[in-house]
Length: 255
Image (cartoon, rainbow, N blue to C red; front, side, top):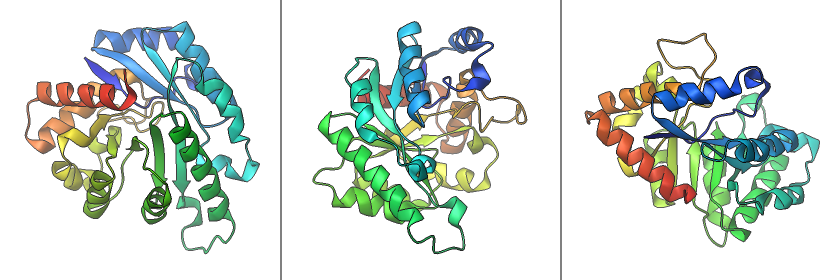
């Protein structure tokens, strides 16, 4: 079986046919999906979906870095974390893409504070963390290094280089590979160097739809296409990629 470790089935894009999307995923052996929150509402929705589809959906709750300017109350997440349906904190992290070419004084700081608050929450409740990192690897690793303990976690939609892989591995982190591996020259060069015991499969649906379905809404049913591309790049049997990534997901999220 496959596990889609990052899919936004809590987003409005799936309101009309969510049950069908889940059914289509099952048909191609995608048996479980982790649905992360990005804000207050989507975190609640993730938990509710985990209750509605208990055999398929597991929830994560958190605030995306773009929420930092809204000054969200991280303590609110604690009421959600205490439900057995919540397996992780996230997605949370740093996203400096908007600030390319700018100093962004103050704006990066509030993202960092929000990230740190959620990391401390992950440690408090012994939950893994789903880390969003875009153009911010140096600061993400610096923040993790300042903690009394590095939480278990995954760098979602990994976009870093070889040195970032090494640092992530030293910190005991996993890396999530998404549908863009089927069309990104950068990922084609990087993925062969990632140890399989670090790999997780993600769709980030409804975004990052893999080839040959680019331009369509992404869905968990496309996880096997991501696994197939990884197998091709790493010159491994597809069955091995499926087995190892599923074992990795179960180990990280305790499922």
